[in-house]
Structures are given as C-alpha cells and as structure tokens.
Image 1 (cartoon, helix red, strand yellow):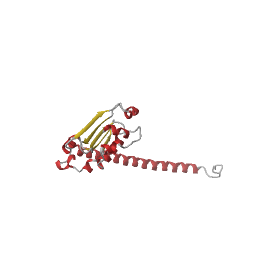
Image 2 (tube, helix red, strand yellow; image 1 turned 120 degrees about the horizontal axis):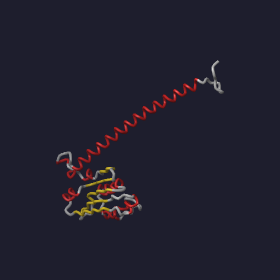
Image 3 (cartoon, one colour; image 1 turned 120 degrees about the vertical axis):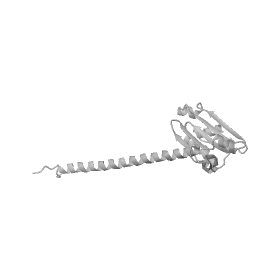
Image 4 (cartoon, helix red, strand yellow; image 1 turned 180 degrees about the vertical axis):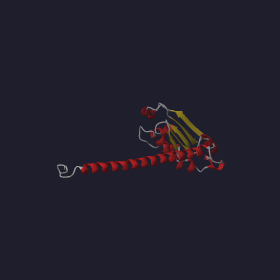
Length: 187
C-alpha cells in the first residue's frame, strides 16, 4: 500500500514538484547570467563609444578637418559628461577654440564650493568656466565640475544650440535650490 497525503495524492508528487521548481530556478539562473553578460557588454561598448567621442573632441584622434574646432556649432554643442569621482561635464567650445572664433571673449571661471548647491550636497569640489561672446552675449562653451553637472550642462547645451544669450538665461527663473538656479551666477 502506498502512502498518501491527507488530500489523497501520493507523496511522490511533492518530489516531482521539487524537481520542477529546481529546473525553473536553473532556467532563471541561465537567463540571469545571460542578462548580466549582455549588460556588461553594452556597458563596455558605451564606455568605448564615449572614450572615442572624447578623444575626437580633445583632438587625440582624427585629422585637421575632423578637429573639434572645424565642426559645425550643432556638432560642437554635443554634451560631454563623465561621471567620475567628481561629475565633470562640458558643452560647446574650448577656451582656445572660442578665442579663435570670437573677436571679444569673456571668460568667467570660479571655484565655488561655498555656494549653497555645493554645501547642500557636501561637495568640496564645485566650479565652472563659461565662455561668452561679448558683442552678442551668446554662450560659446561651458565646463562644469561638481554636483548636478550632468543636469546643468544640458541647459547650457540648449542655450548654445538655440543661440540663447546670457540675458535670456539670467531672466529665466529656475527652481531653488537646484543646480540650475546657479546658472545666472555662472554668467
């Protein structure tokens, strides 16, 4: 006589259910490993693409005709952002390229870890450099390091791409306290 549970099913059913559960868990592990491998490959490809673009922007690769300074402004307005120990971001022209392009250039640069944004985030590193064409008030480039650089640089990119002036940005009211609320003081 075989043993049965109180519901009338053989106990062997519990054993087969256990094996089925292990098989499902084993399949989940295979798919998890495949997903992790795929994500690692995509991360490496993204890093390589970013490094290639960074090398092109900084002039490490490419010829004179491919130099950053010789690209159209729309291409130069591509935002470059690296999330390293301290967030670093840049958009538009370098100071050297801006000096070649603009007759009169105003460079505004400062270390500002004492600004509220830096203090609130507890960041000892916070600074900026903005490049402004004096005659038109157009922003030619922005370079940021510190909290929210990844978000604030997008606003500078938008300003460059659409030829907004420093007056346009200074007259914009940004939520406070945010990284964007510092933009008016960076100009």
